[in-house]
Image: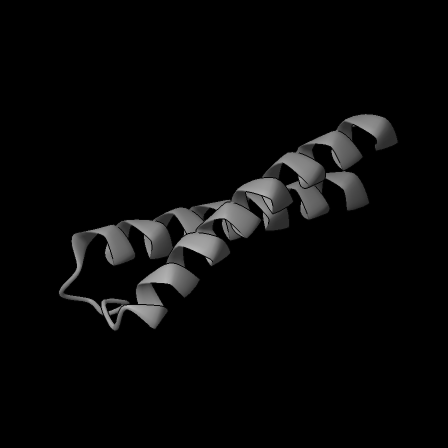
Length: 63
């Protein structure tokens, strides 16, 4: 993977992570950031998937 492709992919992932952080912050303020809220669970699942993708990108780049 070219360094510029890696950086582009990382920036896209980080932008999505920032959106998730904003969403979960709003949930926390309204006291609904908990496992009984399907939107919160979805946000956490998306975050996990994005972090796994980021780790995979790092592994590919180091090879």
